[in-house]
Amino acid sequence: MAITSEKIEGTKIINEVKSSNIVRTQYDTENKEMIVEFKNNSSYKYLEVPHNTYVKFRKSDSQGKFFMSEIAKKYKYVKL
Image (cartoon, rainbow, N blue to C red):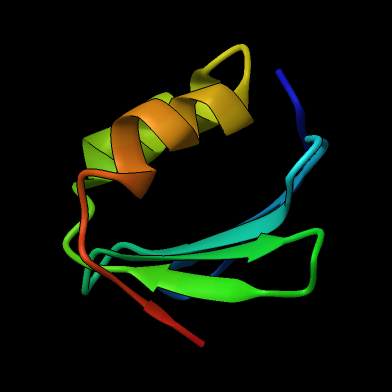
């Protein structure tokens, strides 16, 4: 697993990720929004990501591969 640290602040779960592409994620359990910060200094907010999908992301062997196949192309997003 490539999660290097996890912090919970209220309804937000913040994970530092060791990945070739992703630096950090933040998931809000209340509004089901996932913010992903990439190594190229861009950030995107993914909308209506179910909590169980985020749990699977955190537990996957490769967060980058899981993100690309199960989140990036399946959920609406906005660039931050």
